[in-house]
Amino acid sequence: MVTDLVIAAVVAVVGGGTAALVPYVRSRRKSHAPGSAADGGVGTLERGQEPAAGAGTLAPPEPRAPDAAAPPDVAAPPEVAEVPGVVVERPPPSAGRLARLRSRLARSHSAIGSVLLNLISTGKLDEQAFEQMEDTLISADMGVGPARELVEKLRTEVKVVGTQDPAEVKELLRGELVAMINPELDRTLRLVRHGDRPSVVLIVGVNGTGKTTTCGKLGRVLVGDGKTVVLGAADTFRAAAADQLQTWGDRVGAQVVRSDREGADPASVAFEAVNVGIQQGVDTVIIDTAGRLHTKAGLMDELGKIKRVIEKHGTVDEVLLVLDATTGQNGLRQARVFAEVVDVTGIILTKLDGTAKGGIVVQVQRELGVPVKLVGLGEGPDDLAYFDPDVFVDAILAD
Ligand code: GDP
Image 1 (cartoon, rainbow, N blue to C red):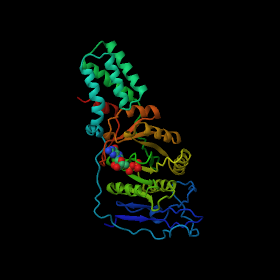
Image 2 (cartoon, rainbow, N blue to C red):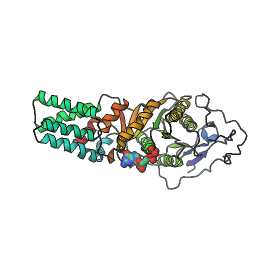
Image 3 (tube, rainbow, N blue to C red):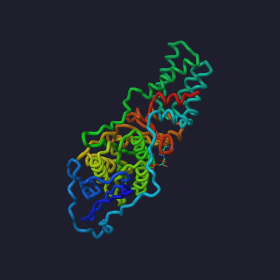
Image 4 (cartoon, rainbow, N blue to C red):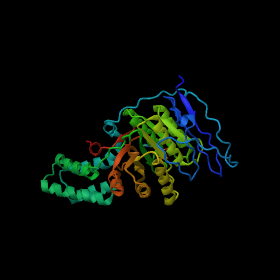
């Protein structure tokens, strides 16, 4: 099959001591469209330079003088090669996934659910029991304010209804927990194409939270639901991140746009990923970013520039903040910094399988004012699920 291709594109010759960007796209499904990255129709950018506006068609790069400081540049496109031994997978659709993965919440269940159920099961909810309930919720990272609020409401309801019956009290508690997570919040991902342009999802967050893995998993979720995706490896500070994303893309036949140079301009990669998304007519472009919390201003510059540059020919529909559920207050502090520098539209809470602190769902939504849209429940490729408060609470309070 000649359709398994490795494409490379740009002869980027740089001047002024700046780094060259050589985005390339590896496609295992279809050959490139004219004017796409594959035939050299991509722009090359220098650090600090922003691409010109244009509806997805870029002028070929201007040849410039070679830079003695830069490594020998990139004249030759990578070879065309098959990807041996890689079979394109068809991931399962996302529907009902949280319910199927509910056993992964076992730690939260035993730390929150079973303690609460034990308290209720005595049929004698006194002041001491309510206090214990509050402590349990606080130690599960729900946050002091929300935990107090919940217990206060439950106390009132139990009084008003006049019941101590364990089944009835459990139902009241269930209702309060779901209300705390707020089922009214819109958790749908805005992934509608804009005419001939794809929707764009930016994935942000501190390194180590599971960002790159989540990009790959989200790509699989969308492909499993019948969508086409391009992945953009704009975490250019970690060479392994691009390789990781490449592997995820290869598995589902999604194109990956990356630079072959560590430290290349992330905004250029993001721009090119959207460009390839437009050329290939895909539904969604998912962009991985670096999560270095060097300085708030630096982070703001980097993410701000990525967003601005994408918006020259696309629309950023979702900015999803990845947060590691096991990191507690520290993770929340870091998440707050991201929320201050970029308009986050949703949270992806990862590693919920590895923590007893499921209460973090409530606290993070309160703190950041945006809904948890997806949750990571394991290291497997299909362990990312759309979040549903009812299913979540049922899993925690399972008998
Ligand atoms: P990044 O630096 O933020 O891009 O993080 P990576 O994507 O490289 O992930 C860091 C580690 O977290 C990897 O070992 C992942 O397999 C792991 N990871 C990501 N999501 C989850 C999850 O939901 N559950 C568990 N248990 N591990 C996860």
